[in-house]
Amino acid sequence: MTGPAETVDVVVVGMGPGGESLAGELAAAGLSVVGVESRLVGGECPYYGCIPSKMLIRAAGTLAEARRVPGLAGQATVEPDFSVAARRIREEATDNWDDAVAAKRFTDKGGRLVRGTGRLSGPRQVTVAGNDGGESTFSARLAVVLNPGTNPAVPPIPGLAGTPLWTNREALRAEAAPESLIVLGGGPVGAELAQAFARFGTHVTVVARGPRLVPREEPEASELLADVFRREGIDVLLNTSTTSVSHSAAGFSVELATGPDSTGADDAGPAVARLAAEQLLVATGRSSTLGTLDLAAAGVAWDGKNAPALDGHLQVADGLHLIGDAAGAGAFTHMSMYHANIVAGKILAQHFGGPDRGTTDSRAVPRVTFTDPEMGAVGMTERQARDAGLHVRTGFTSLADSSRGWIHQARGFIKLVEDADSGTLVGAAAVGPSGGEVLSMLALAVHARVPVDTLRTMIYAYPTFHRAVESALADLH
Image 1 (cartoon, one colour):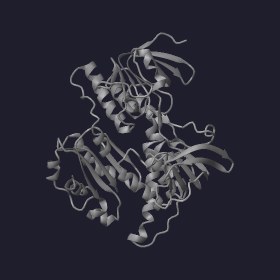
Image 2: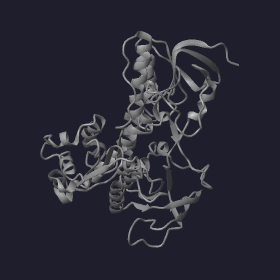
Image 3: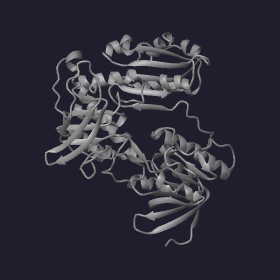
Image 4: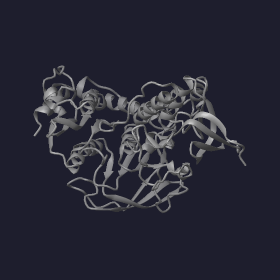
């Protein structure tokens, strides 16, 4: 039995990047803040997502760059050593998956960290089942903020449950690269890790249910990445479903049902019915944990699937906010931090007075898939814009046609999606070396509704990758 509710100013359930940022700012401002977290303060990003994965990708990219020496600068011998990258992830990025530093960062600001699993038990009320077996309830004067995050989704494939499969979490705790690896899923996580392990010498096969890799991106990006993967020795099976999985001392065996053109190649051979590999990585998406929070206890109706309706300050009910993945605007750390800033501004303005920090605007959400070539995108794809009924014009240029792209022997492109009626960009893609960095000017253009005519009058530094934007603008039709 829990005792009477303890009254505080704010309760934050889920101390991932946005939750930690928001809770820390409010505590530093003098509010009484309880942060609830059952796992690691900081969430997926610093321990299993953004930071360690990019350390691994950086290491793998260095190997790939060294292998390009013969075509550019002489001779080089490359001997991969996965343990170097693994040690950096363990020691420099995650402190061996210990969140003591992050927890202290929050409590040093005056916050109170409660280790456990929180759920709503009434309007602005949270009950926490503690990791130590106890239970406590908190009532919030100002607000409850829910930042539940997601977990890796493991599909109900016969034979899969109970096997020593990898999700991104296990993959980034690996001490050695396996001899062979099957990756289920061709989205960003699967694509990034597939290429990284392949560059360390693992024989990798990617199995994707749909007709292309990274299906959220422009088709040109999917086609380019598939070609790059094949050139790097990564087998790609498209339109392929996994029907069963088994595991033994020899590794994993995966049975497949393949559709037409499963390899995506014109000279595709016989469909593969069974694959074997030392390790299996499941990268088939993320599953929401919002359902564990019992929104109904706070009087909130939810269909259990789609993000609940939120106002501009991310409120689902008076004093109850959702941030991050659960808000439905994109499962990205930068979105969680963006939401945290808006909600913190709302709460501080409510308590101390003065203006808040505005409301959400999700027209120009940027995203980057850190493969090589790097894939940056913002706003709508061409298909999304057409489906929305816009009068669309597109501009496209190959990076190889730019001076910098030619110098680097780079593969990639710039694609622009214009709403011709307003004369502004509603989406863009920057694929190639530093694609996520080139994306920044395009994200600004979409966010600020900069007229295309204004973009045409800019001065683009020569020779840079971003200069290719000028050629894409000239191609708008």
